[in-house]
Length: 350
Image 1: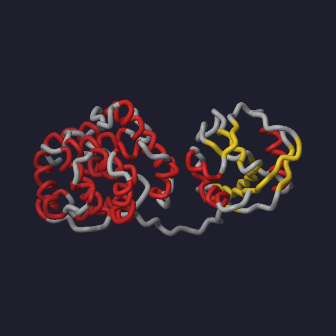
Image 2: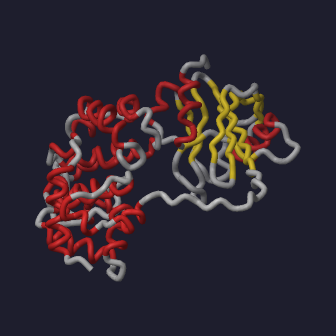
Image 3: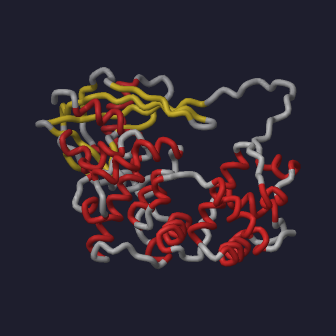
């Protein structure tokens, strides 16, 4: 079992020869590091490196400039990254930093974790890369390296021993990330570090091919079909918040719900609107449809424009209701699944 000091010496020597040239490694600005960490959560490094990271910092170079922005201004720069709740959390956190901390990025772990969208990993990464604090940003890749080399050690405790032994939180975390990338890519680890990763150990980091077995009948996916009502009146659309007992509670969406067996989408939309907000509506043919694939289910969303024929909307399920103009869609915390439909509605006459 390698000692922390021996491993870290070999790791940092290897890193000096093989480190990746990434723009967020050329700064110690916690704001820029934070933006890179959030973008990298669900997006490949080359896309963030070449496109989104430089464009975002050009538009919003400091936390203060971002805090003064609206989501409508941030959205065009974030568009294409997906998972728009991440971008909205970034904007919310920037406003808190500007208002509560005078534009100075907090350094304490718990304070960082209290900000929207920042968890333990991201808080540790910001501290390590911005201030060289001796903390380990532990993701699944770092976990695997530690579990392979020190199988009897607790990951968090071993990671802390290693980062302290290295003498640099910034360099150790960057080196471990590059090592994980090299191992996943099947690169041969050279130098003294290679002694820790002989061929039989390196194989543990390669994607495992599943053994072929007798083909089982493919399981048919269950399709959940949702009819959605985009009710318009006087240039605005009616929206409502998600119920407290549902996922993504508090975010905004259009009225609608699950289509029942034998029910047409038109009848589904009329029934759901009647049950949720107590009005009768006319339903036009759908203007947008999307299918979201999940492991066991395909979620089909079909958006229809509607007009109220009878009644006045009431929050029958305890939700909040509001009317919003298409020009103001960017200011609303909509479910990400509505993004494409919202863009289409903006281009349509009301």
